[in-house]
Length: 354
Ligand SMILES: Cc1ncc(COP(=O)(O)O)c(C=O)c1O
Image (cartoon, rainbow, N blue to C red; front, side, top):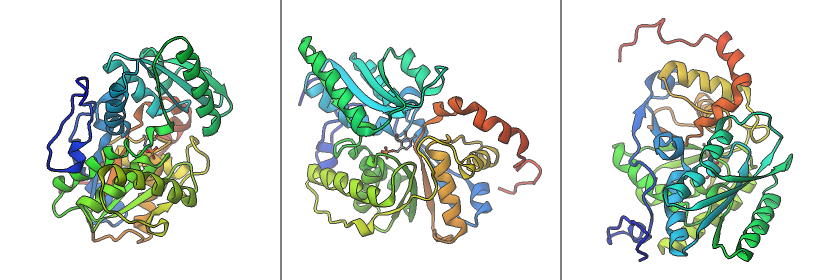
């Protein structure tokens, strides 16, 4: 093993034999949210607080980056490149991880123009990530080819670049969520039966599906899309799961039909929805937990709707994985402040018995 890799290993499990570097504050807490559960008739609802993984204000990507950075250090790279939308959480967390390991970082961002360095853009700046911007273009293929061109330039200058794909969603990165499911299985007894989370580039979902199958075989893992169609999600998730299972050398069969995701809780990637904004307010005012308008607000809106429609079984323990993204809140001040001012959702008017 490379001496740079401060790996945690216990030789008993294949998962512990894969090198990782320590970047996330884990295990993250699990919090019960009884008032929110009651609004939709769920008996027990918990939030797995992966917004508290610590790295650059927390989020799901810290777990994936632990595995990616083991590979980056093993290859002796001196500069990490990645891609994302303007408010990419993955880009910020990659920049923070690179800095924590003493590496340089360059990011290709794309999307609608911006006038202020708010939210994650400000964090990119503070972390000293060099940014190239594709204005009005967030097509993954274009971002990826701009990154490859930049990496080529760096190679010609004698640098050793490492390129991380969108969302860090690779078979190796997804192992972070296999590990998260092992962690969760030990935190809730009996184990959770329904696990709901946001799906973007599919790595978190893929890892959660594989991890649940290994450590909580009875659990149903449900993805709420923030960008892709359910067909696309099934295709990409299956690819990543297969890659991760190969790395762990575990026997695992999964078909696209077994992948449960819903693509009706977003309209356009990055654009807040009414139900997402309402979920943000409900969660904040009933439980004191903050969500963001691009990922966790929409996925919580999905969970609440599925519970109301009894697509979730109300009697079974349900976990929402809070995947982070909170810096994005500050880039959406205008979209949230008026609704927040006008809406009254308060638990302080009721006496709570719990
Ligand atoms: C806060 C947050 N939640 C969820 C996701 C979705 O994760 P994945 O891209 O692994 O599907 C992302 C991805 O960028 C994210 O930033």
